[in-house]
Image 1 (tube, rainbow, N blue to C red):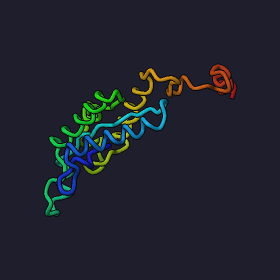
Image 2 (cartoon, rainbow, N blue to C red; image 1 turned 120 degrees about the horizontal axis):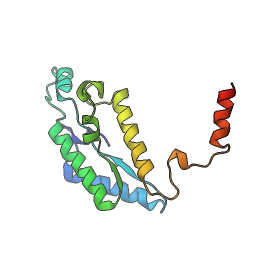
Image 3 (cartoon, helix red, strand yellow; image 1 turned 135 degrees about the vertical axis):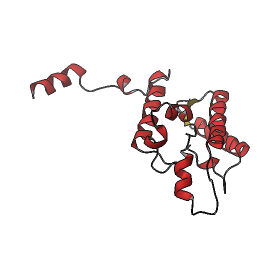
Image 4 (cartoon, rainbow, N blue to C red; image 1 turned 90 degrees about the vertical axis):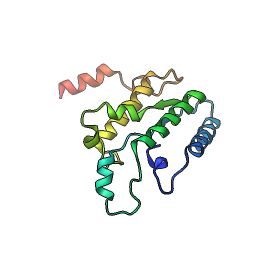
Length: 156
């Protein structure tokens, strides 16, 4: 769900965040037995970049990695408790080289590189999930065999 609930100023306290996430999950799961739910935990933030962009604001630090990590852990713990798929963006983003500068546009919002991390993590979950039917693209029905598509491109 991103770092927004974890900011200072008007923010959602951690217990309320957890309860809101539980309500969202229960609602989504109630829609159908086949509904698939994947939650994204809060990613880290680049505190230095945020500080630079907000030095003229009187509110001071709005988001910290300490707080984002608490919300990330709460999301992952809730998903374990409710048997939901969770993507640990906190950890995944920090595995990238120079993540503080390459994964964010302003310290909070993801850059194209940060978005690639999210996509890769979502695809891993979809591929590894034992859902029936599978949502992975390789398991979806096709109109033409893969070989016929390759042959068409090779002859062009």
